[in-house]
Every structure is written in structure tokens, then in C-alpha cells.
Amino acid sequence: MLSGTAADIGRRARSDEDTQDECGAGCARMLTCPPTPEEPCGRMALMEPSAQITLLFEFEASHQLRRADWTDARNEAVFGNCARLHGHSYRLEVTLRGPVDADTGMVRNFRDVKRTVRAAVVERLDHQHVNELLGELSTAERILLWIAGELRPLFGAELHRLVLWETRTACAVLERAELDTIGER
Image 1 (cartoon, rainbow, N blue to C red):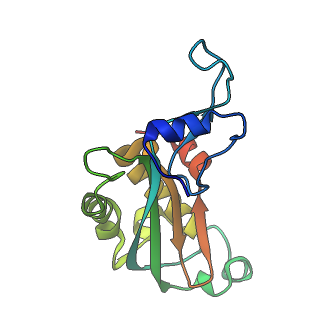
Image 2 (cartoon, rainbow, N blue to C red):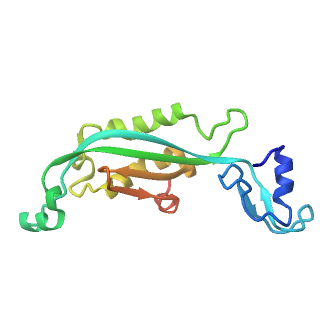
Image 3 (cartoon, rainbow, N blue to C red):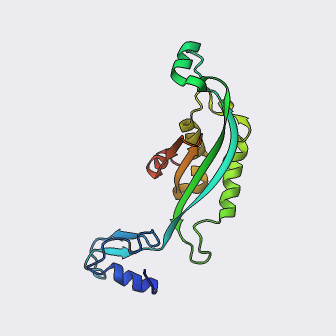
């Protein structure tokens, strides 16, 4: 376990023995840096502490996976029971990653994140027919892409991961790499 000031931790991180994050829990970001006059070894340098926070949201919504240009038989063959109108109790996980603010000790205030996600996403989807918002193919993946498009402009690069659980055992996931392709509006 580490103890001491950030400077002490930084000195330990720059020693020849250290090549990774000291604690393994992500409490301090370590980056390989090119050699400089101040740090001739070019090993690991201590950056500001960062963390991830994840909040869970729930909403109820109906949808139907059906293409109007397909026959009933083809829709049933491809989408199974989901070709019929049905609903889900969705669970949404929103993960933000960023520096831990020195004054507040937080990446973001949970209260503020809750308010933002509820207003931008949950209140708009809860007890709604998702097809009216997204069109006929309102799969978990497409719903999650819509959610990402709504949240990315609000959280920017801090938006790290989104998970939408459609059932207890099935979910769609967008990791940081996929979120970065969505871009900001």
C-alpha cells in the first residue's frame, strides 16, 4: 500500500523498479514519457489522480423490432418474439472518467450527473414507445447509440462507457473507442 505525498509517489513511480500504476486501482494515472532533462530515464511520470464513476438509471419502455418492407413471416424469422409489440425494464449504466478535482475530491458531482442524464435521456424514454423516437429498428444497440448521441455533447471526453441492459442477461455496450467515433454535436 502506498503512503506519502504525491511527490513521494511520483519519485517511487520514476524509480527503475516501477513500470506500472503503483496501486493497480487507477488512483494515479501513469504515462510513459519521453526522456527530458528533468526526467532522463523516460520511464513513468505521475499525472493528476483520475477515477471512474458509474451511475445506474432505470426506465420502462416499449418497442417492436419489425421492418415494414418485410413480410410477417420474415420479421418473425429474424426478430422472433421481438417482432411483436413488447416492453422492457431497461437499466442504463453511465460511466465517466476524469481527473479527481483537488477542491471537491470528485470527478463530477453525482447529483449533477443524475440530473443531466435524467433530463437528457431517462425522462424522454421512460414509458414511451421507442419506435416513435428511433424508427422501426429500435434495437438495444440503436437505443444505446441514440443515448450516446444525447450524452456525448453534455459530458464530452469524460463519457467513458455506456451499458444498456434490455433484460437481466442481455445488454449493449459502448466503450470509449466507440464513443469517440460518435463525436460531439
